[in-house]
Image 1 (cartoon, protein in one colour):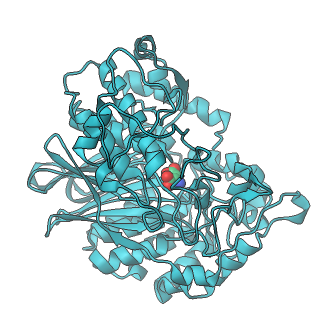
Image 2 (cartoon, rainbow, N blue to C red; image 1 turned 90 degrees about the vertical axis):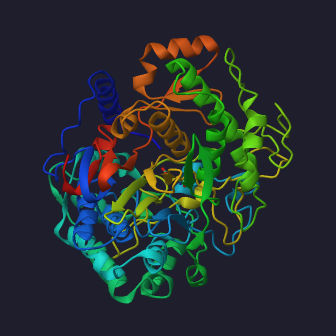
Image 3 (cartoon, rainbow, N blue to C red; image 1 turned 60 degrees about the vertical axis):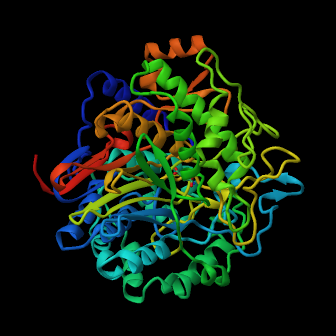
Length: 597
Ligand code: GLU
């Protein structure tokens, strides 16, 4: 994903300010006021957007539970964050049930068409250029988001979908206030949006970028929500809405004068009818006496964060110097990513050793690769989790394949103590760039999360496309419980493969380094994904820590902004603390039902 220079500079300046003074971002022009932290009773919601958090709070106030609130917030994000989330995409939903003290998940990942094979992105023996695959019908997977909402509501919700879509429908009809982030995200997509008349009509009103402070309305999306509310999600999986999606994917409505080749995809009504949001068991990792639950494959989030935590468990990070802490965090991420690349794919198609990847024995066998005075070389070879051998690697080192990075994460909690961590996505910022005509939403490009060709020639890659297969994700909505299975904290982030390192850094910052949740979310991030260099946000790049880490052998490159986390924390007396970004993406929005100290 390319970022506009203006935004990168703003982010740079903002991050530098954040490190030195920790100032909160000013609320965006005209929008509902955003605050990055809120404490109180009755439940809490944290998301990147104030209107979306408010939609969840409205549901909680009306007696809804955390699942209801999460669905309402997600639907509102489909309006105000249409480039990150919406009914044209997918995601992963993690739920803690206070009554049974158990964690459940829904895998709502998009699927490849039933006609796809491992050459989905190969033409004349060559991989399709990444950018061409992104802006095409070829990259569009069967959307999973409406099915996820319905599955979560059927399982644990208390209100009908139709009522939960109301706040979002209202927001779409009456409009929301354009902020600088929305404008800059539109700007970075302007060239390709302009090539699709339906997308241009919606997101480039009058051929221009939406003006900051203006009101942005999406009546088509309001109608789509109303239809989903009235007819249920069958409108998408067995109805007219589905037919419109299929037509759009098979014949992308590109302006012929633009000269753009938008490859068609082969999605059919059969694909939509066959779609299933899957209830499945979470991953579970014990860490410092806590239980860390996250999402199991088809996402690599839970297994990779979990393996890295297990690797880190043998070091006392609470007493380590900042340099040693960062060094260990970077090396644990590197190792866990080497294993992720080799072993994780859609378990319906691949024999994924998820349990073994999460065993402490395996983590110990990998942890002994880490030295305090030297840096491991990437690409590092994977180990074999089924046959842990001390300090060993097995097989061929493969580079981490490129994955786009933009999504949105929300966290919600209610007065009964239920918690939801939910990350939803349309993949790139702006997804495929293709709007379903008359429907008001963009289609995802999630299938570009597949490897186009094997990451390492001649070695089995578990993430090649297949019929009905789910591309490997990095999404990692995480809920941490104490020894009595009571919630401690829940969090998550967008950011493609950086999600894993952001969740890991946030968890260790909170659990080991003892930082308040809002501060650990704001802290400058590093991301190592089994690559030669580690990405640093400006706050670390410009800090003396960089030179100290370089003297150990670390190499770095800059990334202006990594992730956009949100979380909720359970405080004593039934209080909740909601936390979001202070600066990234213009700051996030934390809200509680009844504020109170
Ligand atoms: N497609 C990405 C993934 O599933 C999500 C994109 C993002 O979170 O930024 O890993």
